[in-house]
Length: 233
Ligand code: 5RP
Image 1 (tube, rainbow, N blue to C red):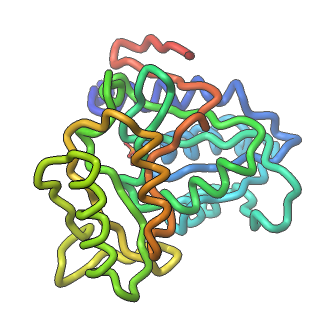
Image 2: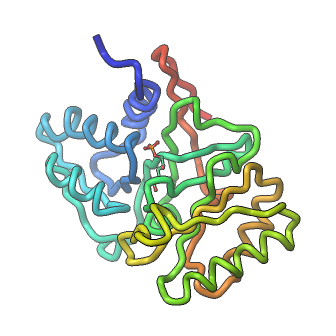
C-alpha cells in the first residue's frame, strides 16, 4: 500500500508533467515535491528515450536530476526557460507565495524571473488565507549578518510587528549556508498583512540579498490532494 504521507505532493507533481514540452528548456525548483517531479520525469521521459534539459535551482536538485539522466545546464547558457516547476511553503488566494523552506529561494527566484511560466506544485496543506505562519526566509550576506538582523528587526517593529522573532536558519552558532554562500534569517511573523510593503522594505536593507516572498510571480498553482484529486488555479 502506498504511504499516504506526501501523496498530495506526488499528485501535484504528476499533474505538472502536462506542462513540460521535452523540446524546450525547463526549470526545476527545489524540495520534496520537486523531487517527486524529478522521479516522474525520469519514469515518463528519460526511461522512454526522450531527453530533458533543465536549469536547476540548487545543488540538491542538480544531484538528483543528473543521477536520473536529466541534462542540467547553466542558466547563462539559455535565453529563456519555458517553464519552471517549483514547490512552495505557503500560497495565498492571490497566488503570492512564501518560499525558501529548503534554503534555495535566491536561485529559485532568479530562475523564476527568467521563465515564461512559473508553475507551483503543492499539497493542500500549503494553501492559506494569509501568508506568514511559515517563517519568512530572508537570504543575507555573511558579512555583518548580526547588524543586518538587527536592521531587519527594527524595520519590522516600524511596520507594527510586535516583538518580531528573527532567527538564523539552523542555529546562531552553526548558521546554515546557502548554495550562494549566504545565510538565511527566518522571520517569525505569524501573519503578513501587507506582503508588498514588507517585500519592498526588506529589499532596501543593505546586505539583504533576496527574500522568500514571491509576489505576482506564479502563473499556475497545482494543488494535489491525498484522495488523488487535484486542482489547477
Ligand atoms: C525550497 C522551497 C521549496 O519549494 C519549499 O520549501 C517547499 O518544499 P517541499 O516541496 O519539500 O514541501 O522553497 O527553497
